Each structure stands twice: as structure tokens, then as C-alpha cells.
Length: 273
Length: 365
Image 1 (cartoon, rainbow over the protein chains, first blue to last red):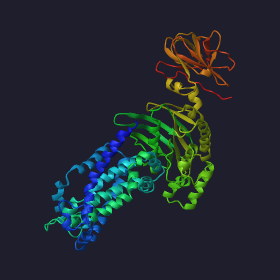
Image 2: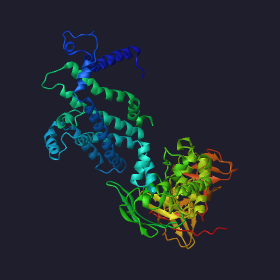
Image 3: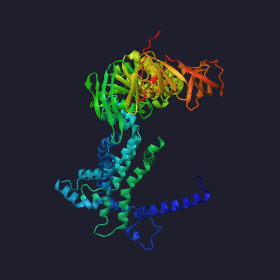
Image 4: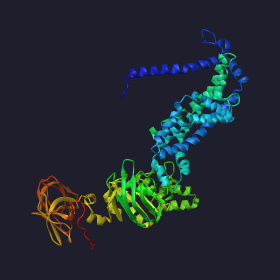
């Protein structure tokens, strides 16, 4: 069915409006980051002003931006590597050795994502405190791993489902054990799928704020915790908060746009094969 | 080199009894073909032998060792799949050498074995190609080569030729049989194509609805089908099966009055059937002739001139179709009324339970 020219124009306009509405807060944040504190709270809002990077300098000077950024990198990459290392054999077993309980297991894993995180805040907070993982990178890596694990398993599972089972059956009959099948067959055959799963996991982990704010302080805090500090009791400093936010989202925005092609390719892996 | 023994082997799914107790002994170096209509359980049985499906009842042994619970990678068998199941990210040489590489066989040895198999299968010129860049026939050969280099105890083939075009299929048929003689290895071959079964097998196992209907050499199955199912399944064009009632019997003959036709004689020593019994007479198209004043009448519905032979499809008064292999110069045309007579010494007789009532010994000239 071919769309008429008119409906194409209408959908085009709607899409642009939606995109602008969604992007506007980010745009405004970026603009505000280049204002002084006075300009930032001016009413009516200033459209034209002389940009300054003073807020960026203030935001990074004594707040330890680099430490938080480093924590974000370590936690998101670390939890992604860990999650894939755990999910890879799990998805292998689920995809190629299905039992009557496979479907239930998958649903159960996903159902853990439906529980509000705040519901387990106390037990996890106290648990981490007891075993001394409070405000440690390892603790946060563990939490983010567990948080993303269901999604990572699901994604890998659906990529593995695209691989003809007979290829692995042929390997089994040929005397090739599970570990060798995973390493020499599954890994190369599902490369794009694993890459897009890893990208998504990194992004989710980078953007994760709830646990980061609640179980870390000055040692293991990620950029999410770093932004949260600017809305501290000292009052709201809009320009500094915006500058900090820009610094926090910039790496992942750049990362996302650089890997966009891979992400899309990974997500359509099954369709184009 | 393997002797495989199946004793009362069963496969039960929760709601479906796929394999209902199969007893079978496959000798070393034998080429055995499992044949049957789709859904008869032949592929399931092969996969059970490979270890890809659990055996839910009975015993299966390889060379005297119970193998029910041995995982597929430890059984020492090789399998060639209908879809070839090549590793798409590896070259032909890597595909063929992969199992050896994983088994930590020295590189030189792998190279020699791959080269040897490649020469045998005429793959020497494509060793550096990926499966994507190969023709169907070449992919098939790579799948076979991958099995050969491992020097397995036995080969399992799951309808390996069904994705090839007709000419290639005929060629590969002979090549596989030659390979069996050359490698001196047990081979089990699954197909739904009874011509493949007839042309390749040392022994054919006819499967139907999870049971073995008959096991025997191709000619045994052809000439002495054990029951109506095998009679109808083996042979192309199909055997003609007409029902009737036994009217007389002596030590050498049984006379049957066919429904809507005259009497025919089936020869055989002391056939255990009493007059009055309802029977089915089986007559192969090539053992049925168009004659004047034959006992079976009908109208030539369709005539197929194949050159070396002519097939006449005759419509009987009761609507049943019979096929007669006629002389190429018979001159029968569509619409002609014809009469036919079977050769009494080649016709077969089935009792009311569908089982054969006689078995003939044949001596080749």
C-alpha cells in the first residue's frame, strides 16, 4: 500500500513536532549551561546572550567530575562485561536446549523488571552495608549487572534463536563440547547481536540513577550521582546543574551516535539475514 | 566400523508416541536405509541414534556398549543434515577440519586429512571458499567431507539429497554407495524417496507410524512385501492391489475371484488360506499384461509413453485405477476398452489382516 503525498507530509510534520518536543529540554539544558547563574534564572528567558564556559569550570573545579566520569565508565563497562559473561551461557542453554520450563523461566526473569526498584531498596541497601559493598564500584557493578541481566539474557536468547539449531547439532555430533560450541560457533555467529546487546547494556547502566544515588557517595558515585549533587541543600544553581548534566550525558550521546549504525544493524539482525 | 543394535527402542513425547518399540540390528559396514512417508518417525529414529533426541524406552548399543545415555559428541558417529548445517563463518577447509582442530589434532595431520577428503569429493579447488559461495552440490559434499575427516564409526544421513536437483541427486546416489564401499563404514540413510532406498540400500527398513513394517534387501521388499503397506509403498509405479474371495486352493495354486472381475490364479506352495477367505491380490504393473479376454477389464484412462516403456492407466468399473506396463508398440489409446491378466507366478497374496500369505524364493539367473 502506498501512502499518499498528503499523509506523508502530515506524518512528517507530526514526527518533527514530536522530535522537537522531546529534544527541547535537552536543547534548553545545553543552552543554559553556557549562561551565567543570573542569566539562567532570568524571566522572560534569554534567547540571545554571550556564552560563557564559567559554569563548566565551576562544575568541574571542585566536584571531582573526572572521578565520577571514571566511575561511570568502570561501572557501565564492568557490569556489561559481567552481564554478558553470565547471560551468554544462560541464553545458549535456553535457546538450544529448551525444556517445558524454558518459557516460564524467560517470563520469570523479565517479571523481575516489573517490580519497582524502590521496593527492594531497604534490603539491598542494608545487605550491601553489611557486607561492606556500600559506596564501592564493585558493589555498583554487581547491582547494575543484576539489573540488566534479564534484558541481556532476553536479547541474546532472541539472537541465538536466529541461528539454525542444526549448525550446533552438527557440532555436537562432531564431538564438539558446549564450551567450544559457544566460543567457536555461537560467538562469531552472533557477533552483531552481542555487540548491540552490549551497547544497550552500557547505555542502560550509564543512565541508571536510582541505585547509584542511593548506595554510593563520594567514592563510587557515577555521573548520575554527580548531577544529583548539584540540587543539594545549598540551593539550585541552574547554570552549573545544566553544565554538569551536559558533561554527564555528552559521553553517552557521542557514544550512542557513533555506534548507532551498529545498534540498528544488531536490532534488525534477524530480519535481514 | 560399528555394529548398532536397537532393542525395543521407543520415543514418547507427552502427547505423542513417535517410535513404538523398534528392534533392529545394523551390521558393520552395512548401508541401511530408513524409508517411510513423512511423519513415520524415521528422522526421529536417526536423531535418537545420533544422540540428539533422548531414547525414552528400550536399549541402544554401539559395538556392544549401551549408548542410550552417551552424549552425541561421545558416540563417535557423524551426521549429514538435510540443510547441510555448515559453519557459515568458516571456509570449506575450516569446516572440514573444525572437529579435528577442536580435538587438538596436529595441524599437519588436519591438513593432510582435509586434503585427502577434498580430493575424494572433488572439493580441492574450493577449499578457501565460504559455504555461501558454493553450489548446493558442493555444500552437500562439504557436509559429507566434514564427516569423513573424522573417520567416524558410522555415518548418519538425514535426507541429504532432497535439496539437490534431479540430475545431481542421481549422481550423488551412486557416489554415496561408492563411498560406503570405499570407507568400509556403517551408514544409515533416511529418505522418504523409495527410489533412493531401492538404489542405495543393502537393507531397507520400512517405517510407518513409529513401527517397522519390514526389513530386507531391496529385491526382497520388492518381490515379497510383508504387508499391504510395504506393497503399496515400495515400487514405482505402484503395485496394483485388487480384493477378492478365494474360490479354490490346492498345493500349488490359489484361485481368487476378484471383485468386479474374473478369476485369477496365484501360484505358490501350500498357501495357508481356506476357500471363502477375503484376500487382496497384489500385481506389479510389469507383471500385469494387456491381453485379449483377460480376467480383469477396464478402460484405458491415460497412456504415458516413456519411450522405453508405456504406462497404461486403466480405470476399472468400480472406479479403482490399475497401472500396466505395456509394450512400447502396444498401440493402446485413451478410451480403449482393455482386459488384463496378471502373471500368476509373480502375483502376491495378502490375507484379511493385510499380511502376506506367501513368500517366494527367487534365484537370480
